[in-house]
Amino acid sequence: MEGVLKISEAANLGLHSMVYLANVGKDRMVPVSHIADALGVSKDHLGKVLQRLAKLGLVTSRRGPAGGFTLGRPSNQIRLMEIL
Image 1 (cartoon, rainbow, N blue to C red):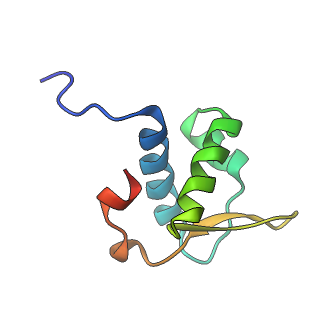
Image 2 (image 1 turned 45 degrees about the vertical axis):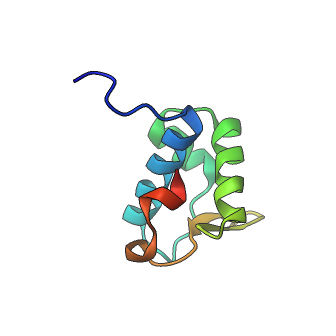
């Protein structure tokens, strides 16, 4: 059943990033470089995807040395279609 679900690379990154952040926990800020390393993807591309998710309120971000990304609300309140 190869090719049953075809999504864009950005949607794929968004989905995997959200799962990663959900596993880390709501209160911990994770730098984009840590997520990119864990997923084996480009930090720049992932940063743009996370910025789009932040505009939707799915993640929150903070700048600076203690900055990064975290889920914008509890994971059980986030739906797959919102990410895609």
